[in-house]
Image 1 (cartoon, protein in one colour):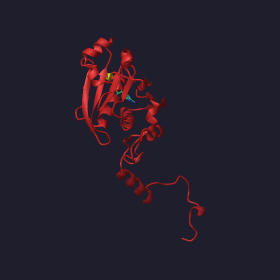
Image 2 (cartoon, rainbow, N blue to C red):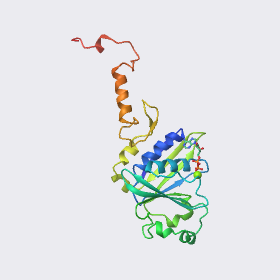
Image 3 (cartoon, rainbow, N blue to C red):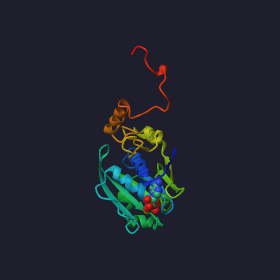
Image 4 (cartoon, helix red, strand yellow):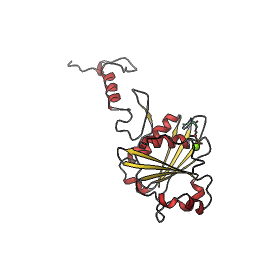
Length: 223
Ligand code: ADP
Ligand code: MG
């Protein structure tokens, strides 16, 4: 298992973290999200859906409809769907059957079928229906706005192109725009190429200052 722990201090930083995970996901993945009420499961899921490229916003709560499906178009993955399951009220395999579970999950591997990625809340209630290669995320509220995200990802994910960036980088604020930037952003820690160039420009035009007086050694004698 790949273990990764991250702490964020705002919903925006959480969204950047979710966008990083979105860049690591592949079709058939199943992600279990754990955490108490108010931990940030919906905040994380909404940002993940958005980063995947869903057209419609997340339903405010899937509690009455236990399975929601959100089609998405993603630059890397192409067309797919995010399956959002709230297993809170589910107790038995029979429940799953009546929800049409087998049409969405492959019975032998228990992975999501076709071009789908599944996110399951309260996954412990349907443990028997979960795949061996399950990814999981536990969100722990620390204070008012501090949340710890503990990821446990299958070892097989180490072969995925964005895993290295996702595990090496933390969400960061763009030095130019102050937006939160995903760990997997190609211009990390900048929000965009433009923001990166603006920062470079600031260097050249003296927008940055050194914290001590310039000494002779700092200067090229031949200039
Ligand atoms: P859950 O779905 O787990 O019950 P929600 O995502 O609905 O939780 O609610 C999380 C609440 O915590 C939101 O009101 C959000 O604004 C707030 N919050 C504060 N700090 C954070 C953070 N760092 N990450 C995510 N949410 C946060
Ligand atoms: Mg919720």
